[in-house]
Length: 415
Image (tube, rainbow, N blue to C red; front, side):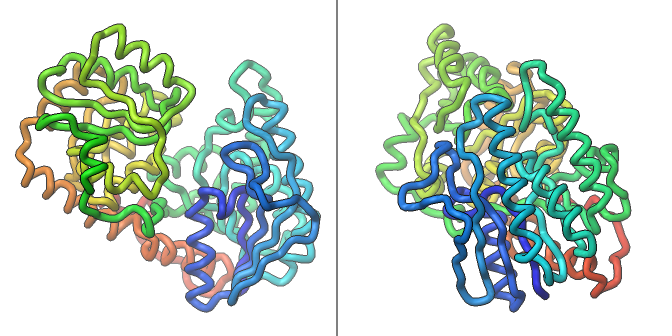
Protein backbone atom coordinates (compact mmCIF):
# COMPACT_ATOMS: atom_id res chain seq x y z
CA UNK A 1 0.00 0.00 0.00
CA UNK A 2 0.88 3.68 -0.26
CA UNK A 3 0.37 4.96 3.28
CA UNK A 4 0.41 8.55 4.49
CA UNK A 5 1.21 9.41 8.11
CA UNK A 6 0.23 12.75 9.69
CA UNK A 7 1.87 13.47 13.06
CA UNK A 8 2.56 16.68 14.95
CA UNK A 9 5.74 15.17 16.44
CA UNK A 10 8.17 12.77 14.82
CA UNK A 11 11.74 11.61 15.54
CA UNK A 12 14.23 13.00 16.46
CA UNK A 13 11.57 14.25 18.87
CA UNK A 14 10.53 11.63 21.47
CA UNK A 15 7.70 10.34 19.30
CA UNK A 16 8.49 6.64 19.07
CA UNK A 17 4.96 5.46 18.22
CA UNK A 18 4.61 7.26 14.86
CA UNK A 19 8.34 6.87 14.25
CA UNK A 20 8.51 3.12 14.86
CA UNK A 21 5.21 2.59 13.02
CA UNK A 22 6.57 4.33 9.93
CA UNK A 23 9.78 2.28 10.00
CA UNK A 24 7.94 -1.01 10.53
CA UNK A 25 5.37 -0.38 7.79
CA UNK A 26 8.18 0.47 5.38
CA UNK A 27 10.04 -2.69 6.43
CA UNK A 28 6.89 -4.67 5.60
CA UNK A 29 7.00 -3.40 2.04
CA UNK A 30 4.62 -0.43 2.13
CA UNK A 31 5.49 2.95 0.65
CA UNK A 32 5.25 5.38 3.59
CA UNK A 33 5.06 9.17 3.46
CA UNK A 34 5.20 11.14 6.72
CA UNK A 35 4.02 14.75 7.05
CA UNK A 36 5.18 16.46 10.25
CA UNK A 37 6.76 19.61 11.66
CA UNK A 38 10.29 20.61 12.47
CA UNK A 39 11.50 19.20 15.80
CA UNK A 40 11.08 21.54 18.78
CA UNK A 41 9.77 19.37 21.65
CA UNK A 42 10.08 19.65 24.63
CA UNK A 43 12.12 22.86 24.75
CA UNK A 44 9.95 24.90 22.41
CA UNK A 45 12.88 25.79 20.17
CA UNK A 46 13.81 24.22 16.85
CA UNK A 47 16.61 21.74 17.45
CA UNK A 48 20.20 22.87 16.77
CA UNK A 49 21.22 22.13 13.21
CA UNK A 50 17.65 22.43 11.91
CA UNK A 51 16.17 25.40 10.07
CA UNK A 52 12.50 25.74 9.23
CA UNK A 53 11.81 26.03 5.52
CA UNK A 54 9.08 24.99 3.14
CA UNK A 55 10.81 22.34 1.03
CA UNK A 56 12.43 19.80 3.33
CA UNK A 57 12.27 16.07 2.63
CA UNK A 58 14.38 13.13 3.70
CA UNK A 59 14.30 9.77 1.95
CA UNK A 60 15.18 6.23 2.83
CA UNK A 61 14.03 2.98 1.30
CA UNK A 62 10.21 3.15 1.06
CA UNK A 63 10.07 5.99 3.66
CA UNK A 64 9.86 9.72 2.95
CA UNK A 65 9.52 12.40 5.65
CA UNK A 66 8.26 15.86 4.67
CA UNK A 67 8.56 18.61 7.28
CA UNK A 68 6.56 21.82 7.17
CA UNK A 69 7.01 25.01 9.21
CA UNK A 70 5.01 25.68 12.36
CA UNK A 71 5.18 28.31 15.07
CA UNK A 72 7.52 26.93 17.75
CA UNK A 73 7.07 27.66 21.39
CA UNK A 74 6.54 26.07 24.77
CA UNK A 75 2.95 25.49 25.88
CA UNK A 76 3.05 28.44 28.29
CA UNK A 77 -0.28 29.95 27.29
CA UNK A 78 -3.39 29.22 25.31
CA UNK A 79 -2.34 31.72 22.66
CA UNK A 80 1.08 30.10 22.19
CA UNK A 81 -0.41 26.63 21.88
CA UNK A 82 -3.05 27.74 19.42
CA UNK A 83 -0.50 29.58 17.30
CA UNK A 84 1.53 26.39 17.05
CA UNK A 85 -1.49 24.16 16.36
CA UNK A 86 -3.00 26.46 13.75
CA UNK A 87 0.28 27.20 11.98
CA UNK A 88 0.88 23.47 11.64
CA UNK A 89 -2.68 23.01 10.39
CA UNK A 90 -2.14 25.61 7.68
CA UNK A 91 1.22 24.25 6.57
CA UNK A 92 0.10 20.61 6.63
CA UNK A 93 -3.07 21.33 4.65
CA UNK A 94 -1.15 23.22 1.97
CA UNK A 95 1.41 20.43 1.61
CA UNK A 96 -1.05 17.53 1.80
CA UNK A 97 -2.81 18.19 -1.52
CA UNK A 98 0.20 17.10 -3.57
CA UNK A 99 2.10 15.03 -1.01
CA UNK A 100 -0.80 12.70 -0.13
CA UNK A 101 -2.70 12.90 -3.43
CA UNK A 102 -2.30 9.22 -4.38
CA UNK A 103 -2.02 7.42 -1.02
CA UNK A 104 -4.31 4.44 -0.41
CA UNK A 105 -4.93 5.33 3.24
CA UNK A 106 -3.89 7.94 5.80
CA UNK A 107 -2.81 7.21 9.39
CA UNK A 108 -3.13 10.08 11.88
CA UNK A 109 -1.38 10.03 15.25
CA UNK A 110 -4.21 11.95 16.87
CA UNK A 111 -3.30 14.31 19.70
CA UNK A 112 -5.12 17.57 20.53
CA UNK A 113 -2.23 19.36 18.78
CA UNK A 114 -3.05 17.56 15.52
CA UNK A 115 -6.79 18.20 15.55
CA UNK A 116 -7.05 21.28 13.33
CA UNK A 117 -4.49 19.88 10.88
CA UNK A 118 -6.43 16.61 10.70
CA UNK A 119 -9.69 18.43 10.02
CA UNK A 120 -8.11 20.44 7.21
CA UNK A 121 -6.31 17.51 5.59
CA UNK A 122 -9.36 15.21 5.69
CA UNK A 123 -11.54 17.92 4.17
CA UNK A 124 -8.98 18.43 1.41
CA UNK A 125 -8.45 14.71 0.74
CA UNK A 126 -12.08 13.68 0.95
CA UNK A 127 -11.62 10.47 -1.03
CA UNK A 128 -8.65 9.20 1.02
CA UNK A 129 -9.76 6.93 3.90
CA UNK A 130 -8.22 7.77 7.26
CA UNK A 131 -7.32 5.77 10.38
CA UNK A 132 -7.11 7.90 13.53
CA UNK A 133 -4.98 6.60 16.40
CA UNK A 134 -6.53 8.60 19.25
CA UNK A 135 -4.23 9.28 22.20
CA UNK A 136 -6.23 11.85 24.16
CA UNK A 137 -9.86 12.93 23.86
CA UNK A 138 -9.67 15.59 26.55
CA UNK A 139 -9.72 18.72 24.42
CA UNK A 140 -9.00 21.07 27.33
CA UNK A 141 -5.67 19.33 27.85
CA UNK A 142 -4.41 21.07 24.74
CA UNK A 143 -6.22 24.36 24.92
CA UNK A 144 -7.44 26.08 28.00
CA UNK A 145 -7.28 25.61 31.73
CA UNK A 146 -8.00 29.19 32.83
CA UNK A 147 -11.59 29.83 31.77
CA UNK A 148 -11.32 30.92 28.12
CA UNK A 149 -13.69 28.34 26.71
CA UNK A 150 -13.90 29.33 23.05
CA UNK A 151 -10.88 27.27 22.00
CA UNK A 152 -12.17 24.26 23.90
CA UNK A 153 -15.46 24.52 22.01
CA UNK A 154 -13.67 24.82 18.65
CA UNK A 155 -11.42 21.88 19.48
CA UNK A 156 -14.42 19.77 20.45
CA UNK A 157 -16.27 20.64 17.25
CA UNK A 158 -13.23 19.78 15.13
CA UNK A 159 -12.79 16.46 16.93
CA UNK A 160 -16.42 15.55 16.27
CA UNK A 161 -15.98 16.26 12.55
CA UNK A 162 -12.87 14.14 12.22
CA UNK A 163 -14.36 11.25 14.22
CA UNK A 164 -17.30 11.19 11.85
CA UNK A 165 -15.08 11.42 8.77
CA UNK A 166 -12.61 8.69 9.76
CA UNK A 167 -12.89 5.29 8.13
CA UNK A 168 -11.45 3.61 11.25
CA UNK A 169 -10.52 4.82 14.73
CA UNK A 170 -7.97 3.14 16.99
CA UNK A 171 -8.13 4.05 20.68
CA UNK A 172 -5.16 3.71 23.03
CA UNK A 173 -7.22 2.49 26.03
CA UNK A 174 -10.42 0.42 26.33
CA UNK A 175 -12.55 3.06 28.06
CA UNK A 176 -11.48 5.65 25.50
CA UNK A 177 -13.80 3.91 23.05
CA UNK A 178 -16.83 5.14 24.97
CA UNK A 179 -15.46 8.69 25.00
CA UNK A 180 -14.88 8.89 21.25
CA UNK A 181 -18.29 7.33 20.56
CA UNK A 182 -19.90 9.93 22.82
CA UNK A 183 -17.99 12.58 20.86
CA UNK A 184 -19.49 11.44 17.54
CA UNK A 185 -17.60 8.35 16.33
CA UNK A 186 -19.41 5.42 14.73
CA UNK A 187 -18.97 2.58 17.27
CA UNK A 188 -18.63 -0.02 14.50
CA UNK A 189 -15.46 1.73 13.29
CA UNK A 190 -13.63 1.86 16.64
CA UNK A 191 -10.94 -0.66 17.62
CA UNK A 192 -8.55 -0.99 20.57
CA UNK A 193 -4.83 -0.64 19.77
CA UNK A 194 -2.79 -0.29 22.94
CA UNK A 195 0.36 1.79 22.66
CA UNK A 196 3.78 0.18 22.67
CA UNK A 197 7.00 1.52 24.16
CA UNK A 198 10.43 2.12 22.64
CA UNK A 199 11.59 -1.48 22.72
CA UNK A 200 15.11 -0.57 21.61
CA UNK A 201 15.48 1.02 25.05
CA UNK A 202 12.95 -0.58 27.38
CA UNK A 203 13.67 -4.28 27.85
CA UNK A 204 14.90 -6.41 30.77
CA UNK A 205 18.48 -5.63 31.87
CA UNK A 206 20.77 -6.27 34.81
CA UNK A 207 21.47 -3.12 36.85
CA UNK A 208 25.05 -1.93 37.18
CA UNK A 209 26.72 -0.74 40.32
CA UNK A 210 26.05 2.94 39.53
CA UNK A 211 22.33 2.35 39.12
CA UNK A 212 22.14 0.40 42.37
CA UNK A 213 24.04 3.10 44.23
CA UNK A 214 21.70 5.79 42.89
CA UNK A 215 18.47 3.94 43.68
CA UNK A 216 19.18 1.79 46.74
CA UNK A 217 20.21 3.06 50.13
CA UNK A 218 19.99 -0.15 52.17
CA UNK A 219 18.17 -3.46 52.02
CA UNK A 220 14.67 -1.96 52.17
CA UNK A 221 12.07 -2.30 49.43
CA UNK A 222 12.33 0.47 46.81
CA UNK A 223 9.31 1.77 44.92
CA UNK A 224 10.27 4.12 42.07
CA UNK A 225 8.19 6.67 40.20
CA UNK A 226 9.87 7.70 36.95
CA UNK A 227 8.55 10.57 34.84
CA UNK A 228 6.60 13.77 35.19
CA UNK A 229 5.84 15.23 38.62
CA UNK A 230 2.71 17.06 37.57
CA UNK A 231 -0.96 17.69 38.22
CA UNK A 232 -2.18 14.48 36.63
CA UNK A 233 0.03 12.24 38.78
CA UNK A 234 -0.93 13.52 42.24
CA UNK A 235 2.33 12.41 43.83
CA UNK A 236 1.45 14.04 47.15
CA UNK A 237 -0.58 10.88 47.77
CA UNK A 238 2.52 8.72 47.31
CA UNK A 239 4.59 10.93 49.63
CA UNK A 240 1.98 10.70 52.39
CA UNK A 241 1.79 6.92 51.98
CA UNK A 242 5.56 6.50 52.08
CA UNK A 243 5.89 8.80 55.11
CA UNK A 244 3.67 6.40 57.06
CA UNK A 245 6.15 3.58 56.33
CA UNK A 246 9.45 5.33 56.90
CA UNK A 247 11.07 2.21 58.39
CA UNK A 248 9.66 -0.21 55.82
CA UNK A 249 10.31 1.09 52.30
CA UNK A 250 11.86 3.87 50.21
CA UNK A 251 10.07 5.97 47.60
CA UNK A 252 12.38 7.26 44.84
CA UNK A 253 11.02 9.93 42.49
CA UNK A 254 13.01 10.24 39.26
CA UNK A 255 12.10 13.21 37.09
CA UNK A 256 10.72 16.73 37.35
CA UNK A 257 7.64 18.75 36.57
CA UNK A 258 5.37 21.61 37.50
CA UNK A 259 4.45 20.12 40.90
CA UNK A 260 7.97 19.14 41.94
CA UNK A 261 8.43 22.02 44.38
CA UNK A 262 5.13 21.27 46.11
CA UNK A 263 5.90 17.55 46.36
CA UNK A 264 9.37 18.23 47.73
CA UNK A 265 7.88 20.66 50.24
CA UNK A 266 5.37 18.08 51.46
CA UNK A 267 8.11 15.48 51.93
CA UNK A 268 10.11 17.98 53.99
CA UNK A 269 7.05 18.99 56.01
CA UNK A 270 6.27 15.35 56.85
CA UNK A 271 9.92 14.58 57.65
CA UNK A 272 9.79 11.73 55.12
CA UNK A 273 13.46 10.78 55.00
CA UNK A 274 12.55 7.67 53.00
CA UNK A 275 11.36 9.84 50.07
CA UNK A 276 14.24 10.72 47.76
CA UNK A 277 14.37 12.78 44.59
CA UNK A 278 16.60 12.03 41.60
CA UNK A 279 16.91 14.50 38.74
CA UNK A 280 15.59 13.59 35.32
CA UNK A 281 17.63 10.99 33.48
CA UNK A 282 17.97 10.10 29.81
CA UNK A 283 15.54 7.35 28.68
CA UNK A 284 18.51 5.11 27.87
CA UNK A 285 19.45 5.13 31.57
CA UNK A 286 16.00 4.16 32.82
CA UNK A 287 15.95 0.36 32.30
CA UNK A 288 18.90 -0.04 34.68
CA UNK A 289 17.20 2.18 37.24
CA UNK A 290 14.00 0.15 36.84
CA UNK A 291 15.98 -3.02 37.47
CA UNK A 292 17.69 -1.55 40.53
CA UNK A 293 14.29 -0.81 42.13
CA UNK A 294 11.80 -3.41 43.33
CA UNK A 295 8.61 -1.89 41.90
CA UNK A 296 7.58 0.86 39.49
CA UNK A 297 4.85 3.23 40.68
CA UNK A 298 2.13 4.37 38.27
CA UNK A 299 0.04 7.26 39.58
CA UNK A 300 -3.05 8.90 38.11
CA UNK A 301 -5.44 11.22 39.91
CA UNK A 302 -9.12 10.43 40.30
CA UNK A 303 -10.37 12.41 37.31
CA UNK A 304 -12.99 11.14 34.81
CA UNK A 305 -10.80 11.85 31.79
CA UNK A 306 -7.93 9.78 33.27
CA UNK A 307 -9.93 6.61 33.78
CA UNK A 308 -9.62 5.94 30.06
CA UNK A 309 -5.87 6.60 30.02
CA UNK A 310 -3.00 4.11 30.07
CA UNK A 311 0.18 6.15 30.76
CA UNK A 312 3.25 5.26 28.73
CA UNK A 313 5.30 4.52 31.84
CA UNK A 314 3.17 1.41 32.37
CA UNK A 315 4.18 -0.07 29.02
CA UNK A 316 7.81 0.79 29.71
CA UNK A 317 7.72 -0.93 33.10
CA UNK A 318 5.97 -4.04 31.78
CA UNK A 319 8.38 -4.30 28.85
CA UNK A 320 11.27 -4.20 31.35
CA UNK A 321 9.63 -6.99 33.42
CA UNK A 322 9.31 -4.61 36.40
CA UNK A 323 6.46 -5.33 38.83
CA UNK A 324 4.06 -2.40 39.27
CA UNK A 325 2.21 -0.64 42.06
CA UNK A 326 -0.68 1.29 40.49
CA UNK A 327 -2.55 4.04 42.30
CA UNK A 328 -5.12 4.62 39.58
CA UNK A 329 -8.60 3.74 38.45
CA UNK A 330 -10.13 2.57 35.22
CA UNK A 331 -8.05 0.92 32.51
CA UNK A 332 -4.64 1.24 34.20
CA UNK A 333 -5.66 -0.63 37.34
CA UNK A 334 -7.60 -3.21 35.32
CA UNK A 335 -4.59 -3.95 33.14
CA UNK A 336 -2.26 -4.44 36.10
CA UNK A 337 -4.73 -6.71 37.88
CA UNK A 338 -5.68 -8.81 34.88
CA UNK A 339 -2.05 -9.30 33.92
CA UNK A 340 -1.24 -10.14 37.57
CA UNK A 341 1.74 -7.84 37.12
CA UNK A 342 1.64 -6.10 40.49
CA UNK A 343 -0.63 -4.40 43.02
CA UNK A 344 -3.25 -1.69 42.66
CA UNK A 345 -5.42 0.56 44.80
CA UNK A 346 -7.92 3.39 44.23
CA UNK A 347 -6.39 6.76 43.24
CA UNK A 348 -5.83 9.65 45.67
CA UNK A 349 -6.18 7.41 48.75
CA UNK A 350 -2.92 7.61 50.68
CA UNK A 351 -3.97 5.08 53.32
CA UNK A 352 -4.84 2.49 50.67
CA UNK A 353 -1.56 3.17 48.88
CA UNK A 354 0.35 2.84 52.16
CA UNK A 355 -1.25 -0.58 52.56
CA UNK A 356 -0.10 -1.54 49.05
CA UNK A 357 3.42 -0.29 49.82
CA UNK A 358 3.50 -2.39 53.00
CA UNK A 359 2.26 -5.48 51.14
CA UNK A 360 4.77 -4.88 48.33
CA UNK A 361 7.59 -4.82 50.89
CA UNK A 362 6.50 -8.14 52.41
CA UNK A 363 6.32 -10.02 49.10
CA UNK A 364 9.48 -12.13 48.65
CA UNK A 365 11.81 -11.33 45.71
CA UNK A 366 11.01 -14.52 43.73
CA UNK A 367 7.31 -13.63 43.76
CA UNK A 368 8.10 -10.08 42.66
CA UNK A 369 10.15 -11.47 39.77
CA UNK A 370 7.23 -13.67 38.73
CA UNK A 371 4.96 -10.58 38.68
CA UNK A 372 7.46 -8.95 36.36
CA UNK A 373 7.55 -11.97 34.06
CA UNK A 374 3.76 -12.04 33.83
CA UNK A 375 3.71 -8.33 33.04
CA UNK A 376 6.27 -8.72 30.26
CA UNK A 377 4.31 -11.64 28.80
CA UNK A 378 1.16 -9.48 28.75
CA UNK A 379 3.12 -6.65 27.13
CA UNK A 380 4.50 -8.87 24.39
CA UNK A 381 1.07 -10.34 23.72
CA UNK A 382 -1.06 -7.19 23.74
CA UNK A 383 1.13 -4.05 23.59
CA UNK A 384 4.34 -4.82 21.72
CA UNK A 385 5.43 -3.12 18.52
CA UNK A 386 4.68 -6.18 16.33
CA UNK A 387 1.24 -6.63 17.91
CA UNK A 388 0.38 -2.95 17.56
CA UNK A 389 1.60 -2.63 13.97
CA UNK A 390 -0.32 -5.78 13.01
CA UNK A 391 -3.52 -4.12 14.25
CA UNK A 392 -2.80 -0.76 12.61
CA UNK A 393 -1.86 -2.44 9.33
CA UNK A 394 -5.14 -4.35 9.34
CA UNK A 395 -7.11 -1.15 10.02
CA UNK A 396 -5.37 0.53 7.08
CA UNK A 397 -6.31 -2.40 4.85
CA UNK A 398 -9.89 -2.27 6.12
CA UNK A 399 -10.08 1.48 5.54
CA UNK A 400 -8.88 1.01 1.97
CA UNK A 401 -11.42 -1.79 1.44
CA UNK A 402 -8.82 -4.53 1.02
CA UNK A 403 -9.97 -6.92 3.77
CA UNK A 404 -13.27 -7.79 5.38
CA UNK A 405 -14.14 -6.18 8.69
CA UNK A 406 -13.34 -8.57 11.57
CA UNK A 407 -16.00 -9.84 13.91
CA UNK A 408 -15.65 -9.96 17.66
CA UNK A 409 -15.23 -7.66 20.66
CA UNK A 410 -13.83 -4.33 19.54
CA UNK A 411 -12.69 -3.49 23.10
CA UNK A 412 -10.04 -6.19 22.87
CA UNK A 413 -8.45 -8.20 25.63
CA UNK A 414 -6.22 -6.44 28.12
CA UNK A 415 -4.31 -9.50 29.16
